[in-house]
Every structure is written in C-alpha cells, then in structure tokens.
Length: 289
Ligand SMILES: C[S@@+](CC[C@H](N)C(=O)[O-])C[C@H]1O[C@@H](n2cnc3c(N)ncnc32)[C@H](O)[C@@H]1O
Image (cartoon, rainbow, N blue to C red; front, side):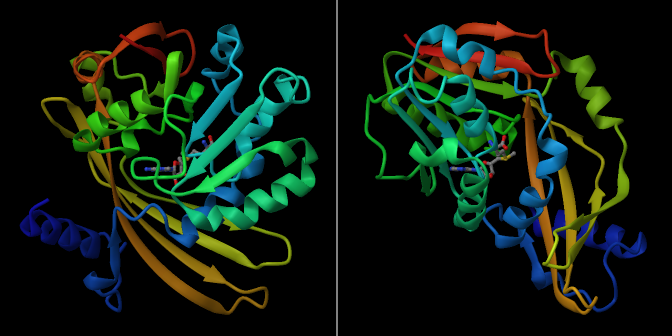
C-alpha cells in the first residue's frame, strides 16, 4: 500500500467527517485483527450470530473424523455446534480450536460456563501460520468457517494451504467457506455494493457499551478479484456514559475469484474434492493430492 493512496483515503474520510479534526493519522491501526476491541465486538454480536448457518458443518461428519481443528475459533461459537452434533463427544476424540486473538480467551471461558459441553475442547490462542503447538499429520478435519479466508491476504494464501497440508492426516480434509464471487461479472456487484457510513451499538449487560462506526471505501478490481477497505471507529463507554477509549482501524479484505483460488490450491499439493454452491457461500473441501 502506497502512503500516497493512504493520504488520499484520509483526505476523503476527513471530507466525509468520518475522521474528525482531533483524530491523528498515526493512531489509525492498520490491518490489526488480534486487538482486544475486536474480541469484545465479536462477543457482543453473539446473539446475532447464534442462528447463523455454517454450510461447512454438513460435510464434517460425512468424513467420519476422529480429530478436528478449527482455525479462527474465536470464543467457540462453531465448536459448540460441532460438539452438540457430535453426540456428546462420542465420535471425535479430539476437538481443538486456534485463534490468533488471545483476547477471546475470557469469552471462551464464559461461553464454556454457559455450555459445559465445551469442557473437553482445547483452545489455543496463537497464529495458526506460525504456531508450534499443533501436531503434524494429526487432523482428520481442519475447518475455517464464516468466510474467513479473505482475511488472509493473497500473499499468505499459499502459506495457509501449505500449513494446512502439514497438519492434515493422509485422508484428512480442509473445509472452508468463501464469499460467492463466481466470475468477473460478480466482481462488479462487489464494486457497486453499498459504500459509505454505517454503525452499530454493541451492548453488554454490566459493562457499558461500544459505539461502532464504519466507513466502507469503494471496492477495487484486481487481477485475482477485488479488495475492499473498511475504516472502523470504536468508542467505548462505561455504564455511566463516560467515554473511556477511542480506537481507529483500517482493514483490507481481499476477495479471490474461484479460478485463481483453484490455481493456488493446486500449487500447494491439495485438490478440490467438494465444491458446493447451494448455500449463501461457496464451500470447499480439499484433500491432499
Ligand atoms: C470471522 S471470525 C470467525 C470466528 C468463528 N470461527 C465463528 O465463526 O464464530 C475469524 C477469526 O479468525 C481469526 N484469525 C485470523 N487470522 C488468524 C490466524 N492467522 N490464526 C488464527 N486465527 C486467525 C480472527 O482472530 C477471528 O477471530
């Protein structure tokens, strides 16, 4: 990212009054996903996410796995569903989750108190791409749900697939979902989608609230698909409405077209066994070649 382009974005955001005169550009945290506020926001959205359909899960038990790892497991939302479908841990002997954001740890603890079926789940807070805490050739299923793949930049996708290949058992499967961007025409739908301001108020009983404000810049076309930039402002208030903290973030999401993703997958020693387009997302099931 060129500083010149960043400067252009800042100018636009001051003009649109998303950035305010007191905001300092050096306070904008760039592509920082493992921040405490992100865990707080995600946890406070849990009621909204409770009924979310996760299309990857229907394929998990078809593989008859005895070991499973979820990448980006957060506070355990998907793992709870899996444990429940797993008939009280009868079928799988090991269920693990890993998340780069250690600030999810207290929320996983709270969630486990609410859903004791999670007690045998092992949660690791570490970067999946660099972790030394996982065992090679040990996972029958590796899951990356909730369209998280675009959070890995195109440069990191190869590393992601190669790392997954190291942890999968010989007949193991990597299941993940991706936004539906089937072809170049659909990229223009992404480019034309709603831009500009949006916001949400995130409440948590006993802990005050977070006023979140977002600014979505127009998506840009690339040779692999498109990318989009979102600025987020989080104002944290205490229960007596006193402003405690102001935080600003810039994050970039890279959307990759199916045919480009397919090429990267093949160069990493994996092949596409399942490609399902019947739900809100594309679901992929990859095995080792
Ligand atoms: C969209 S959230 C999904 C959370 C959870 N899977 C769910 O569906 O409720 C994506 C998660 O991936 C995590 N993540 C991103 N990069 C990661 C990495 N390199 N290693 C481990 N976790 C990562 C983020 O911290 C975030 O919690």
